[in-house]
Amino acid sequence: MHIKSAKFVISNTDVRKCPEGNLPEYAFIGRSNVGKSSLINMLTNHKGLAMTSSTPGKTLLINHFLINEEWYLVDLPGYGFAQRGMAQREQLRQIIESYILGREQLVCLFVLIDCRHPAQKIDLEFMEWLGENGVPFTIIFTKTDKIGRGRLKENIKAYQEAMLGTWEELPPMMCSSSENKEGREEILDYIEEINKSL
Image (cartoon, rainbow, N blue to C red; front, side, top):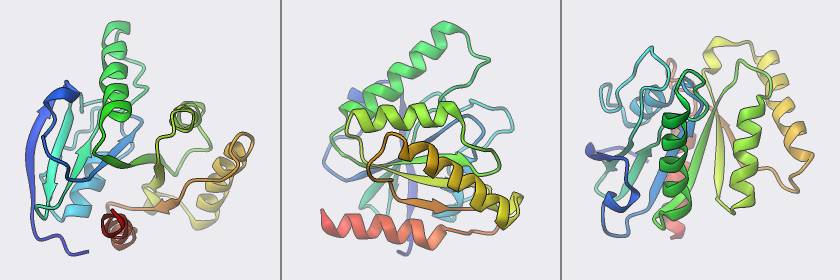
C-alpha cells in the first residue's frame, strides 16, 4: 500500500464523538512507552503526525488520522501506566473499553508489545480480555532493532507458549522497528488486504 495522504482529524475521550460514517478503523494500542507514536509516524511516513514523547503515558485521548481518504488509523491511550492515580487509571480504562467494545467501525486492533521483554502479565491479561470479548487483534512486536535475533525469537516464543495455555489459535504476529522501517510494508499490506475483503 502506498500512503498518499495522512491527516489528523480529531482527538477526544468520548467514543460518541468519533468520526461519523463507516470507513474502516485500525486502532493501535500497547503499554505506555511501547513505541506506538513512532510506529504510526513510520507507517505513514509522516514524522510529526502522532506526538512522540519520552514520558510514558502521554496519549490520553482517542486520536483519529485519516489515511488516503479511505481508512482511519486510530491511536489509543496506552494501558497499565502505574504512576497514574486510581481515578485517572479508571478513566483511561473506560475510554479504551468504550472504544474497543463500542466502535462498530473498528476492524482490527493492533496490540503493540516491546520485543525486548519476556512475556508480560499485563499484555497477556489484556489480550485475554480481547479474546473473551471477541475483538479481532494482531500483535506487533516493536523495537526489533534494539535486540538480537536469537533473543527476539525466544521472547516471541515465550508469548506464544503463554497464550497457547488458553488460546486454541494464536492471532497474527508481526515485527517492526521504527528506526529501520522493518515491518512497514507487511503491516500496510495486511491492512490493504483487510480493506479489500470488506
